[in-house]
Image (cartoon, rainbow, N blue to C red; front, side, top):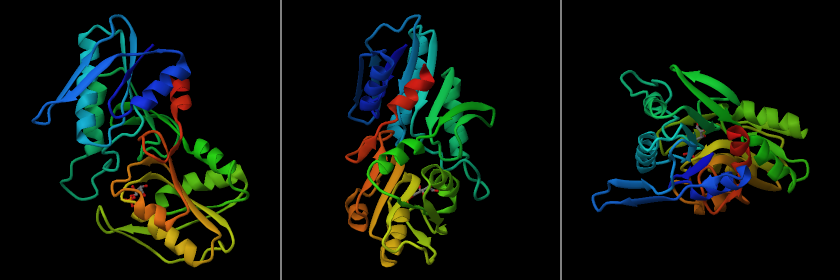
Length: 285
Ligand code: R5P
């Protein structure tokens, strides 16, 4: 198999290729002055199974992924696999209000039309690991939370886990059972893309090392609200972990509100402490 690195995920692609013992393709990507994307695959892909590793946290990375998948077919690849560790637009998987675009479906339809398989990591609307059918599109989804749990397990004795909203409750509950520690959850209301309200709640966190877990951190407000509540209630320490660290507002406020934030490398950042490369390689194998 040949691993094609997308410009959003070069390090992860390299790690996947190393895990697999597979060749990493030589790719040239640049941007024209008007913002259009240019991409070229230098390596010979003819007759080869190819996996493009590209997270899509922004529009440019989506366009680049689409160009690359189609290019691979044009160049005669025998198999084209889309590995999209962070799938952008996945938070709009349904019409919350009449007339809204089903963005997740649209993006996935395009990817599907250009590839033989789609692999995601903790896709926001798929709450478990495995194979799913989403509007007739087959997606294989990997769960990276056990890796995050391992990270914290090695560093924290008897932690207390918190789900900052309903969406992460199931995952946190399962992890707490696996680790054998206590957990609790909060209720969050989203006011806008930027603003969230978290309901105050008494939790038994005094003197505890608390870890708040969510699939995605975007603005960070969900975690900041939860961390402030937990700190007020006398927690010994408050850490946060997520699979996808978008950190659209940077890490400064998050670091001030917690004793540390970590993420995986589905989106590379300064706090990508856990790699999903091994999990992806296992699936590709
Ligand atoms: C939403 O349902 C997700 O699980 C996260 O809670 C959300 O994306 C976090 O967003 P933010 O960091 O902007 O509060």
